[in-house]
Image (cartoon, rainbow over all chains, first blue to last red; front, side, top):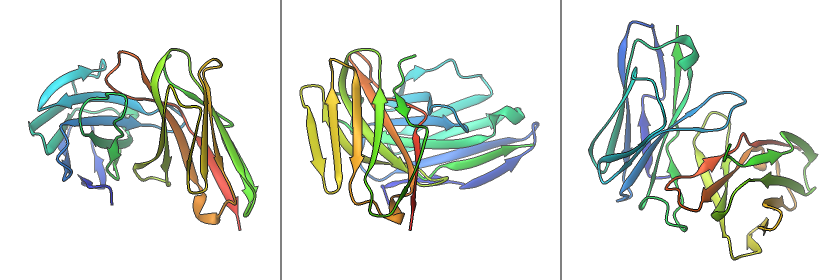
Length: 115
Length: 111
């Protein structure tokens, strides 16, 4: 176990549903990340939080809405998704934003299927 | 694109053989990291090599970095069936505050 948990592990939703993905890290880290992993594509960074403040938003559609209520928890709220949003969503944390020495610790991911 | 690119995309070897994967990138880096991912799971950090280092070892893993060629290689010696996974290089570019991952090399070790 990496110290980063994600729930649910699997999610099937319709395009009109609203759901949320949850990530929790037990490592005392200050930075948290959401990634999207689709088949045959590079891991796609979606959002970066440092000390609960969003520091990066990589042109992600507004149907994805992140929330970081504290440094241990990160949510990804989903609404009116499209079938092409089906992917593995990975959460990660690091001690701080990359400083040349930090590694990232990943959760097991949520496999999302949009019907 | 700032992502590293792994080569080959897929590699199949017999147990006991060595596996070599390569990564190329385009701009100056602070460090380069290798991660492993079992099918459908999260990534696990394997090794980090800084821009001023040329070679690093960890158990059966050996990583080299050639900043003049902007490339790195990961060597897994005496492979085992349990090494079957996807391997990703991730680069931390100078001035960036996150990692950039490639598409990975899918390694299959046949028992």
